[in-house]
Length: 189
Image 1 (cartoon, rainbow, N blue to C red):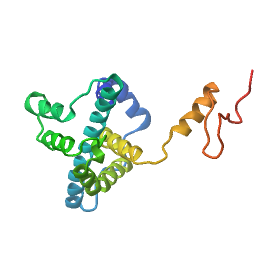
Image 2: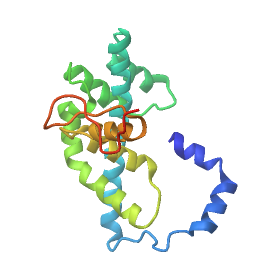
Image 3: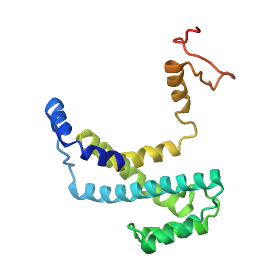
């Protein structure tokens, strides 16, 4: 959302980029539009779940780190009662935090895990269709990336370590050998 707002302010730059790169030659036109509308509805639901999960996970981590003891269920209820969001969905979130104390991430609460299991394939399908048509769907693609990253037992941290080693000789860990390693690009001074 922040990136989309930033880009929306760059109207002149975007117009120049459209001239430089062109616009989508492939319009988003699925073969079965009714089925795609159903997929889009499920994708929006999955994206909403992932976005809330990510936001509440950030608050939970800050609460742990700074010893704030944030009552996440109460926060959801407060937002529901008087915030700009006021979504009925916040009632489900509050209920999930109450029912599954210690679940950590909303994605691990049983009700939300079931919902994501039902909807994440639609999210992937819609993001893929939009990407093929060069139609930006930043909130949905970000939600999918968060969901996919969250459910990886082994993430991309080692690749990031290798990149940092390449640019700054920070070293990286390997899964097959203990200790700090450097890539072939490393030249000690």
